[in-house]
Amino acid sequence: MTRSRVRERERVRAAVQTTDPAALAAYAGALRPVVASLRTLAEDATAEPSKRVHARAFLRREILKGIRELEARIDAATPAA
Image (cartoon, rainbow, N blue to C red; front, top):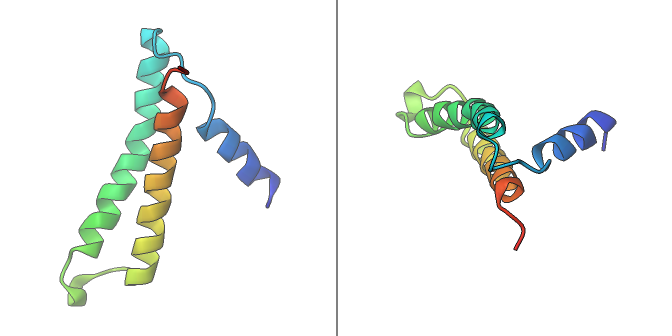
């Protein structure tokens, strides 16, 4: 695994201060590109086969990757019990 992937994984899993409004706003802003990407992929996946831009395998892989990233970020924002 390359170092940039490790750094990206650490960045995604970094703890989020949910009590700080500015930190929470920045966190929500960082989620927007992930959600926008998922929306684009889902729209392509549900298009008619003749109008699809990407192959189904690519779409499935990228959608699942985006969902895993969202899950990791939600876990990072969840307060420790």
